Length: 259
Ligand SMILES: Nc1ncnc2c1ncn2[C@@H]1O[C@H](COP(=O)(O)OP(=O)(O)OP(=O)(O)O)[C@@H](O)[C@H]1O
Image (cartoon, rainbow, N blue to C red):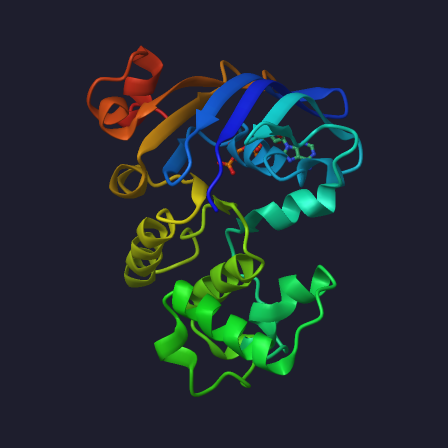
C-alpha cells in the first residue's frame, strides 16, 4: 500500500511570490519523514504540493515534478481529486465535522469520493479505520454521538481514521500535535509509528523532540531573509541530522540558536 515519493526540481509560487525553490527529495515507503525549519520557510506550502492542495489557492502554482511510484502527480492527465485519495492529509487543528456522528465522520472522505457503501461494509470500515487510529476502544459505544463530543486528541485520531478510511498510500500531517496536550501528543506519536508499517508518512513539525522521536529521516528547510524563497538545506537520517548535520545552519537551528 505504501509508496515512494520522488520530488524533482520543485519550485512553488503564490502569484509572483516564490515561496519555495529547487526542492529535490526522495521519501521511502513505510517511513516517516519530518520537515523542520523556522516559520515561513515553506514547510506547509511544500507539504500541500504533495497532494495538489497548493493549487486550490487562486494564483498558486507549481513547477517541477512529484512522482509517486513513477506516476507524476503534475501530469496534465492526472485528476487532482484522485491524487488526494491516494495522498491523505491531516491538519494542525482537528477538524471533524462537528454535528456529524463519529461513525459518519469516519466515512465522510469515502462518501465524498462517491463510493456507495452497503450498511455492513460501512460498519466494517468504521471499525477497521477507528482501530487503525487507536480510537475504537474509546468510542465503540458511542459511534452515533457527534464528532465534537470527543476531546481534542480523540478528534485528531478521528481525523486520522477519516483519512485512512479512504485507503491512501501516503499520509501528510501538518503539525498534527500542535493543538494537543502532551498525553494526546504521545498517543498520536505512537499511532504514527504504527501507521508507518503501512503508509509513507510526511509530517511538518515545530517540535524537534517530536521529529527526533518519530521520524526516520528529517529535512531542514530555511530561508536566507524575509521575501526569499525557502529551500531544503539538507535531508538525512534523523540520527545524523541531530548529531552531525552537514550544514552549520542546520546545526544552529537544531541547537536552538535561531528560529
Ligand atoms: N495563501 C497564501 N498566499 C500567499 N502567500 C502565502 C500563502 N500561504 C503562505 N504564504 C507565504 O509562503 C511562505 C511560506 O509559508 P508556509 O506557511 O508554507 O511556511 P511554514 O514554514 O509552514 O511556516 P510555519 O512554520 O509558520 O507554519 C511565507 O512567506 C508565507 O507568508
